[in-house]
Length: 567
Image 1: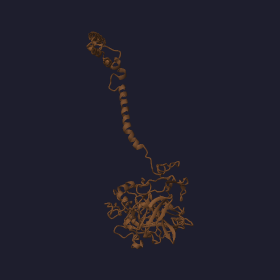
Image 2: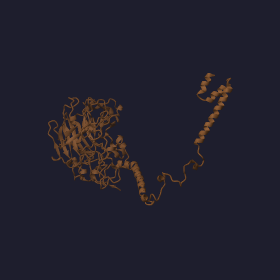
Image 3: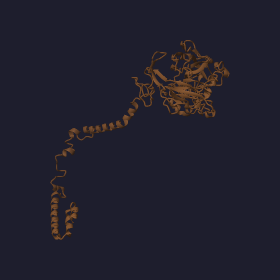
Image 4: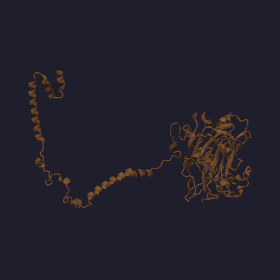
């Protein structure tokens, strides 16, 4: 029992009394319990009476009716007599009302500005940061700093020597700054699509020049601090698209490094038809097929004294697809002039080098390709339109080859450093070109073996009245870089004693621009390309589409000089 008591003691005194009722002393304990209950009931009654209130508020001793004045009534009871001075007799338009309304309007306008006006103003007034050039992501800033990007993926390679960050223009003497470089110092790079941030190797046959090799991405890599492109003979052509040779091309045949306007893609015929090798911004017969008027054999110079292998006609080109004659509303990348006419667009070509052999010695052709063509492919090569620099190695001369029905060439031939071949000393030598886009004083200057080789000026491709065409500018299009190694009977007789495999190695590629005119985008406002390329993406990605209309099934933009005109 004792333990039972202790168990309940903490819960109730009444429980203790009840449990003891089974004890032999129960009557005494029961009388005491009754007395305790009566005492507690009396206490509760006195407390209730002390704190209870009558049903009528008037008996509480507090005046609650409206007629009884209280000290704080002035705080919440309006009075026209008291407020007459400040409220002007309770008029609708009061000073206090204006203040109240004004505060509400300020709050409302503030909320509108915060959630409506601020985003709109930010959209229109915040300047868009340009990523064109060396003063933003991927380039150098005004202090010459180079961003440190994971994987060395800035536009300027971290391995580029400090002394190569600037140079002086060969032609004007102005300062040029480095905007892109690749030193190829990391061995084992691969160039399959998506592998590299700068270069991509193609997987195709370059049918335009009837190459003997298939371009395979596996033939391009980096080794010993250089980009290496390897060409080799294939024992079983059935394993190589039925081609006897396998080599590589990276972008941006015969040993070559060259540039092309961004609206044309090397090896993708549909993108090139009517684009290469034009550089033209006039609306005349030069934009038409064969450079002749519809259903006529004139100008006379366009049908005589041309390509002797093709009936002496001057041109087989289909006409400039995106010309200044393009009718309004036709598909054209723009821009459009204020008079409603388009700027002529194309894919010009400038070659850093195309290698060849003459008299058992190595040579390079350093050239630019053009359309429409001069009569007899003769550009105005007078002494004031070009310059050849004396050099004991280069010994540059103008190329006697001037063109054919598919292109006009302005070319200089130079001897190379004979030690810088794979089976000789294997040294590296510097090739390059510098150019200024446009008309008049525009120019292209080539470098061979680290020295100036030759220059031609835009005025050498001025108006030609014989074929009724206007001036052709030095490329104003955004250009991209291509490097490839290939062979073709179209470029000369194939020596049966050639040793395979053979490798072309490139130590570095660097691009400079004037310090006051930096622009590295491929989609500038004055020569846009991105939207057009995206619209016709298949032409730029499907190498089996050789023509724009027949294969790609796209309409040729109407030309106001054509027979149908803009109707």
